[in-house]
Image (cartoon, one colour):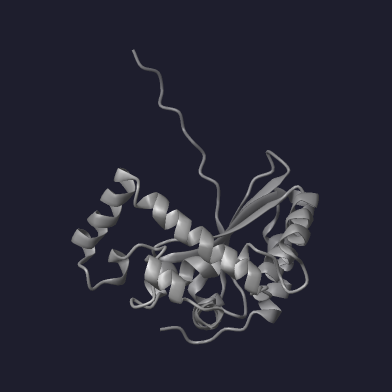
Length: 226
């Protein structure tokens, strides 16, 4: 006979909201001295210009490539020195910054996240490398039957006049046409706190987690987003 069904305890979720509109949700768990986090903003490909697809992807790519005060190598070294990871990514309907860190270094890691988010480098050479990476990624997709099937499925599912029917990387033509100013315009319009939520889980209290976000709260100004 089967025994009793195991009961899985569901941890409590605390909730908060910063003055700039960013929602914060968390779970405290001290099993390991680690903290994971994910900052998700509505947008991604969904906010791209249908006539110049690929901008959102390049914004995310560039935000991994250094800050105003740190080269890509210096940023990578600063993150590694904390035993942390931070990665900016873009999806069909969201822009995200996720990572993990030792609990004792959470504040310092969030400070680097803040720098990446609010002080992108927009370096011309790195921009050309990012465009080359996108173009090569597109070539790889177009040589992969599974990737091709996914691209064609989105066209059928959404209809060719919908932004989500497009390949997030764009096309060879749109990638070539994108400029740094296009990235800056997207960044200014859609990297906004009130369309986002910060999720934090690990060995940190609500009070300490929210306190570590004070710099982000003070510096990241809200604006209307359509």
